[in-house]
Amino acid sequence: MTEILEDEPAVAAALFGTRIDVARDFTRNLADQGEELGLIGPLELPRLWSRHILNCAIVGPLLRPGRVGDVGSGAGLPGLVLAIARPDVSFVLIEPMERRVAWLNDQVNALALDNVSVERARAEDLRLDEPLDQVTARAVSAFRTLIPLTAPLVRAGGELVLMKGAAASAEVEAAAKAIRKYGLSNVAVIPLGEGVLDDVTRVITATVGESPIGG
Image 1 (tube, rainbow, N blue to C red):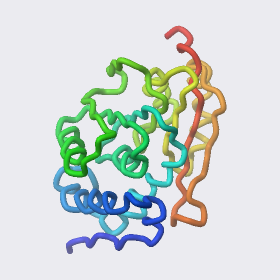
Image 2: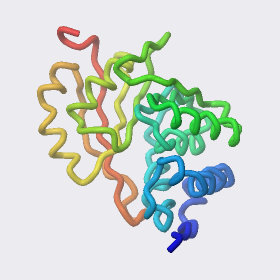
Image 3: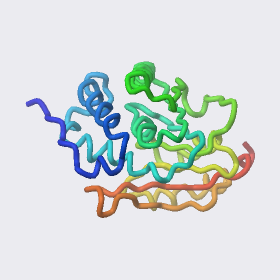
Image 4: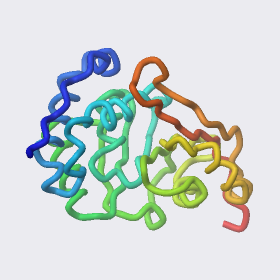
């Protein structure tokens, strides 16, 4: 049985504002091509808006004008969604897989996103001309594993904004050693979307210090 794309939730227009039409175009493109390209699973269409698009968009207010990296962009979640919601922010989408990089570039062009660039690289191998102001990631790996991948990309005083699941607080506890090594401070778990989305989005935020100890 062919899965049917979820109807657009009413809250989508509020989250995207004047950018809602671009968000609709991206969602439709992902629905049409995502499974074939291996970007989303076969059962995701009935929850594509609520579980994926809005789950990412709710993070938008945490971003500041500047350069934001998205590690492991994959289908563009959250990078492309946030680039749509926050046209005042410049995004660097970081993705190692060629077919996913091709998808990201196709969407940047199709949606006329002039605030996005795409880098084909693993985060640990990426060399940027200037450090980023913030870095985000979604469903990449555990917090303690993400820290050495993301913190070196961010300027001192910049911020990690990492999307996590219900075990976010436990991940912070398990990452104590990496938090110390990379000089992170103000580590917090922020729940987003309570009373707005069906499922709460949890984000781990942390301020990045100077160069990591021994790094």
